[in-house]
Amino acid sequence: MPRVRPILQLRTRITLLVSLILGLALLLTGILVHWRMEQQTREALGEKVVLLSRIMAESEVVREGLVGRRPPGQVQDLAEQIRIESGVDYVVVIDMNGLRLSHPNRSLIGAHFAGGDDADVYRGRSYLSVAKGTLGVSLRAFTPVRDGDRQVGAVAVGLLQSGVDRAVVSIRKRIALGGVIGFAAGILGALYLAGRIKRILMGMEPQEISTVLQQRNAMLHSVREGIIGVNRDLVVTIVNEEALRLFALAGSHGELVGRNVEEVLPSSRLRTIIETGQAEYDQEGDILGLPILTNRVPVLVDGRIAGAVATFRDKTQVNRLAEQLTGVRFYADALRAQTHEFMNKLHVILGLVRLEEYDRLKTFITGVAGRLDDEVGFVVQRIKDPVVAGFLLARFASAREQNIHMQLDAEASLSPGADDGFSHDLVTILGNLLENAVEAIGDGPRREIRVVLRPEGSWLHLAVEDTGPGLPESIRARGFSRGASTKGEHRGFGLWQVARTLEARGGRLLAENQTEGGARFSATIPLPGEEP
Image 1: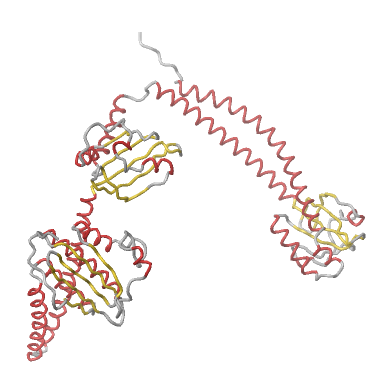
Image 2 (image 1 turned 30 degrees about the vertical axis):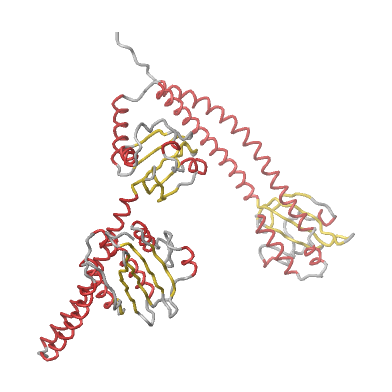
């Protein structure tokens, strides 16, 4: 016999029962709280105006203003300051004849106090009253002002009845809002409880569970970064295939899940991430000696740190990609400048042809060819590496386009490159240094750059000198750390990349200011195939 399903499911019954009980409880509580809070609100507002009237009555400014030792304007200024800061509707100072010395409406200053409830204050009494004045019906407190043993006036501080009513209505709204929120929270709690029970009873269909797990695993293992996740006890709970590959590349094999992360990755710093809750991005580290770039972030569950995740990539691959991108950018910029330069010359030639100025055309072409022959001939004669030579020629063309005099040292020399990687590294180094030199020169009066390339034994010495303002002491102190720059945020990666490239080849980079002005960046790097 088939099982009959109940008309109302467990989740629905729990929700209805909790909602009914909670609704009745909130209704009764709301009525009682509203009655009591309305009383307290009216009492609190009354105490507020009484306190303010006493403060004003004890003020030296008010007392001296009433006896004529201060100008009435100071009394008005003080009254308005107290009124604005305290949020009351008016603060009125009156003399013994009932004439106002202060009022929110300055045109009423000097007129008689309105309302008819001020008689007792002239007899030295302090009291609360509700009466209609010039601004409307209000709750107001009266306090006499004394100068020694004699009364010289009084202070009235009031709140309009409409404001008091608004305060009461505001309380009603807050109580109602609290009841609605409480009722909604109760319903959500009931739904959560019912959902929790359903989860314990495996309410999800097997196919749904399988689909979720497959999607999670596909995302985890499809990324090109290694991923390691740990719980609060630093026990590894998740590792993807790329992480296992990098660990194997570093010489570490075996199961990682279930082990303490500080055993398998001592430099992970995940303990610090869990303790501080602060993420770290693009940090350098290593896996058993394998250099990596890593991001570390805390895992938050309901606002509490439940663990941490580290993602990392082989730094060698990242550096190689960065160097390739840098080289391609410099090649593209240089070729663009060279194309622009030759287009300008072609336009001149076309113009001379159309004007039939053949003699001048011959002179122009001869001059251009001569300059190109001299420049190309000198560079090609000195720089035998075609990659570096082509790059320098393109950079010279780019400099001419920017009205910068760029020259190669007269004793420059470089043998043919037997290592394409070395040639590419030289382009990266020179490209970054020349780019910095061009930016440093800016619009200065002297726009000159000098490039030095001199092999000495097993070393290659290269330098880039400019006529810019030189290096600030703050930048020289930071050295070639990542982000060190005078050009603002998200800059300062060029010199860092140069230093990293030189370091990878056993070279070094120096920076100094020249005595005649400008900066000089010099580097030494072992020549390929030579033992330094």
